[in-house]
Length: 299
Image 1 (cartoon, helix red, strand yellow):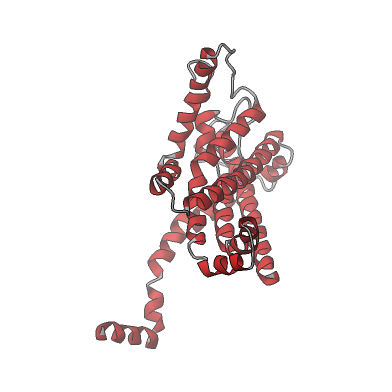
Image 2 (image 1 turned 90 degrees about the vertical axis):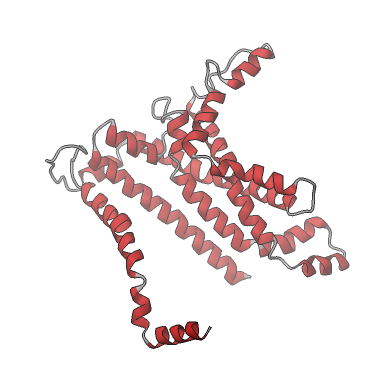
């Protein structure tokens, strides 16, 4: 104990020693995050094909083409649907599971594990599992329809339906994260608030609206921010289920970046779309943080 106190005094007298401890993390962040980001910005101003050692700087040509590219608009809209659609359904499911499994019910721990289990599966594996469910030939859903005497359905052949099914798969896989966050939030709410409200005659709905919801606000912000960022970056499930098809109908910006880089061999334009995706995620995250800060002030 004395040694720890002596070390603490040493650090307080010499803060530069403590600051040196940040250097390894700062170095790794610079090498693996800052440098690739800056390099991506540089490549966005080139016509590099991703493989050649020779390329030219083309100024803002890629950025001008970005606003003329119909596929980019489709992918951007899909990215917003994947981000916000998944986030909304994940909050509804996650909060519902948390409210149910916060009670002392039989099999509570098993149910919590069961809901969280898909989070542990690699997204690409989850995508292929659901692809085998939805595929036209030998798909599990069409086998069930055949048993019921119904015609098979090509579930992933239409763009809007494919986008909806991808949102569904992403929601099912990651709603467990929201459940864990809301469970942690619920367990920090003192029971005396509920006991006092019961004495005042409040029913379960009024307790939920006036006690649970306001005190879960930090959990809401954390869960929404994490799920939104994950949804906007969605890649694996799309690659496994539709590969962006039919045509470009279910591409997100992430999969379109991959397609443009490796199939179209246009690394410069691909980097330009990467900057757009970064700006989109940053903008939505800042809006959420701003709105949440304003709500805290109002409270």
